[in-house]
Image: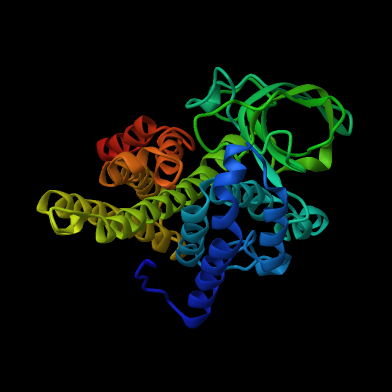
Length: 381
């Protein structure tokens, strides 16, 4: 069953329906096969770009859709519920474009952004390192100024689209200043000296390539610096506020898909002469699942509407990411339980979705980090 949505306009409804139709026609039929084969679906991102679904919240001046986040996230829900690897990929690509769109010069935007938002170029986000995941200020990758260029040396870990992306929004240290020592760059995916390691072998999201990247004296022209030197940490944290909402949307979409599968199964499967949904034990479990999905969606949309209104939304973004990903883990686990033995097989998608839900509690800032962000805000209030 489709989620019951309140959308701000007919145009918004058409965008969400376009995403839903694409998800049903293009993603659902191949998700299980491609995940089983660890196949990265680059062609899907090209199609999404052609439809304008890779650029939904980005500026219209540079061929983006300039949709409110409230609308973008609900379209992303539809994609993520059909195939989480694709939903996460769209969220990461949008976040990778955001730094250039928000802090680049007009010349930089005109040069690179149209191909990025159109899907010709696919992006990755290079922030985390092996010893600097939840603490980006501890990063060691360095960019040393050398005349009209920077030379980058170091390694990045857990890069979504690592080795597949055409460009990376890269954060590297340009000085030892703890707060102003990190800068942001737009690095080409095929730069000499840039090498991707073998993709990580993961328990889920196997259609989304995750790899470490080594930068061995990679030369970047000075015009690939986004913003000023020292702006990088601020840019990264602001990008993560919006990126966390993208992950929340994928998590809500996944949870909705698990709920739909569980309800459909419970309506058809009979025990003791009646559908199992009529047994109180199962019915109450499904009710709790529905409440978790609706609560997570409402929290996510509250943060999105604050963002659209130009209000502070960082804490609300952390709350949304925390609640949505915890809900996805709980709802997917309960969906497997509702289906019983069938839920533990590959015949139904809920076992795959349960594995996919786990990492959503980890990336874009672990849920323990989200609690830390929220607690610090409360301490200052």
